Length: 147
Image (cartoon, rainbow, N blue to C red; front, side):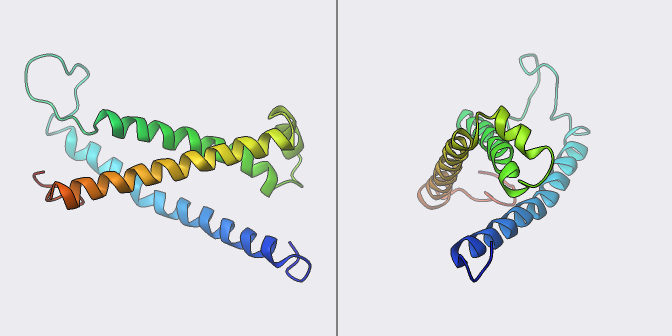
């Protein structure tokens, strides 16, 4: 990571560290939003154990959105499991985890696969936003309200 020996590796390392910190920082408000939704949703009786009975219920996500969330969770976990041993290679747990993954070559392949999945769901998400906001002209997409 010496800037003089290999500037590309140095700047990629800095970029990825800042990206990781930025993602973690952005997740804090998301956790607060989920907590607020539960505080508001429970008194309004939006959350039920059984949704097939009498009365109204709110479906929060479409099937596509649910699969996107599954993709986000799985690809993030795979990126973390394969990337952390590289970032913290000097840590005592890193070689054991790398060996459990099948070695550096397998971990690198899995990491790249998870990155491709990440770019894929990002593209699908942007396409869905474009479709809903530009083509369907849905109102209140970001801040609630009627769709």
